[in-house]
Image (cartoon, rainbow, N blue to C red; front, side, top):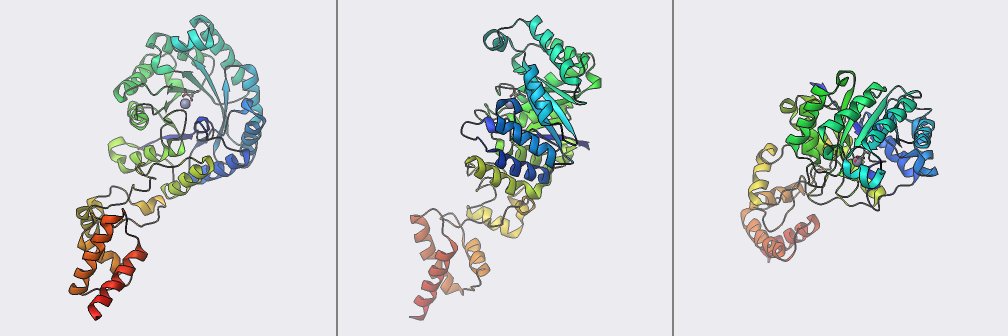
Length: 387
Ligand code: KIV
Ligand code: ZN
């Protein structure tokens, strides 16, 4: 089994989601929870961007032991200085530097030539490397950069001492086979590739962030960058819980595992959602309200006989309270009887028939029948029998 490093960027790239801004104290609380969850690296913010972010990165670096802390920086001396200073007291730390490599970014954003970009990347990596043992370099918009220039930039930063190469799909443009194949080519063709570790960083504009990250793992990357609930710019980043549970559930197919403790996934997801005021879609895999709820009668019946009929993961192992069966108009007699008996009531056949008809009438009028309503219906059915 290969051990995949989970690099959590909820507090940096995740916080870039519109409206998701966090106060420094909130970042500290979430960082503690991420450490408990078992992520390997935390990127707590962008130290140059504000005094609050600097303070949060500094406090997290001082407090959290046993997890690597990452300072984020553009290829600019002031950014590097701020990131190095903010992470100074971390037990283990790294510097994460990024610089665009695609033509569209060079022409319209950086307004630099390719030669200037390579020279700047070299100079800033050499500068940053004096302060830290681990330096991660990201050629931004890498998936829209041709191989030739991408390889040139990566070779240059490896020569200057970069130790981790993160190849981001900044705009969520790649397809899984393409993204995996790109890593294969880079690992084969770039000089010095055997001296560094590779990392995937995927955005979800086409809903492919998790699939692309899995393809990168198949191709040999040893680190993936993720956010809790998949929060992040636009449609977000690769979701931590989806990636981790895909690896956990399909361990032998993937040949890879992580150090994340699944039992803390649900609490972490709820904490981040509340702190960012960012609701979780009902049908969001793993942590959405409906992810382990079953309404169809056939499914409910199957689950009562054996959970694996319709569930590939155990919600309790993710820290999700078990209230799996939603009773509604699609529910069958078996599931309803089961829930009623869980509530401590045994009905004979005649009572059940009367109760079941009343249940279906109510279920036609509302989406979900709650336990207190079930008990009211049971009472009414029993009373009818006594009349
Ligand atoms: O999406 C991206 O390109 C990034 C990098 C700067 C790593 O977040
Ligand atoms: Zn990103």
